[in-house]
Image (cartoon, rainbow, N blue to C red):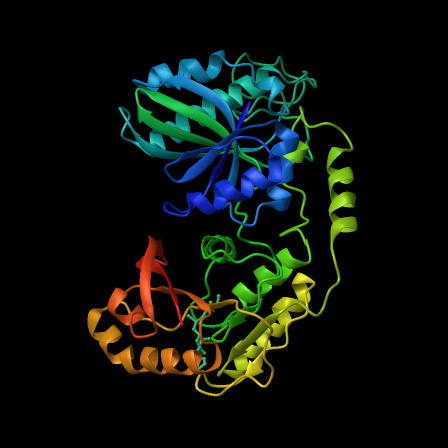
Length: 389
Ligand SMILES: C[S@@+](CC[C@H](N)C(=O)[O-])C[C@H]1O[C@@H](n2cnc3c(N)ncnc32)[C@H](O)[C@@H]1O
């Protein structure tokens, strides 16, 4: 069985490094993700521990999909009773480009085929009112709805169908959207996704113990992600849907959860300085940090004012300043970036800096920068720049 961890294209190196650390086995970098051998328990472990993945998929296999009919037949041929519970709700999502162009039609066909297979594997529960109106007590008709759907408490799971020319890759989404850790209920302007922040910190070479400065923290995502990693706090303790599948060993999730809770530290003296000039952002950061189980006390100050406290050694400054959509917006922002560069050089000379911003010229106002990677954030193409102050 293999696991496919999904990430934003360009950020695969960070995810690959993290997965290697977590699973201690070789990983294979693909476009937009990382593949690794593993079972359902490994998939649940990655949902619990991966800070960089956007999703964890359990790959079921590939089937022929030159036409809708062929795909439907292939899906019907598979033994789903090993994989899903009878009556379990399955959401079918389709992606990729294949011979079959219409994703909606694929979702419908696969959904029907799957529904029939799961009903066929269910135990009859006596005649009932089927979808097509069979009356209680009447002879059960031999069509869909012949078997009453058994009640199930199993959480819904998403089946992902990825089309690629004449094949479709079928995977189960083990944990849903992993960037939704649950702590970021208070937001500030343009927050960065939690897993993107984790990837960016990794790609910039930040590790627990390295001093970190986050002077325009917004909702605090970078600081909180760094503090959680420093204290070995799992990104989310919610049970991922994969733990409810028939093949998932009983008790395994409870054990993983117990170990995760025992592993977490309570260090409140992590070398992180956090600030924002906006009081609302500082409040949001503090509230989010409490929910995440870490201690962050943001200073309310403009970038040009010095921090009251300093950190020992040389570390990393992480920046996600305001940026615009149009070139003209970014021209207007040039003085702010110039000010950021001057202020940071004065207080953190020789430190490494990593910055998320759309425009290389703008980033260059802060320091001499190299573009590590470019990706889309909220529909805008942004670069991740690194340099030295
Ligand atoms: C794009 S947001 C940061 C989002 C953050 N990465 C997050 O995940 O929530 C930019 C932040 O910079 C702050 N900011 C703008 N100008 C500033 C300045 N001169 N000094 C300090 N903070 C500033 C804003 O208040 C805003 O919270």
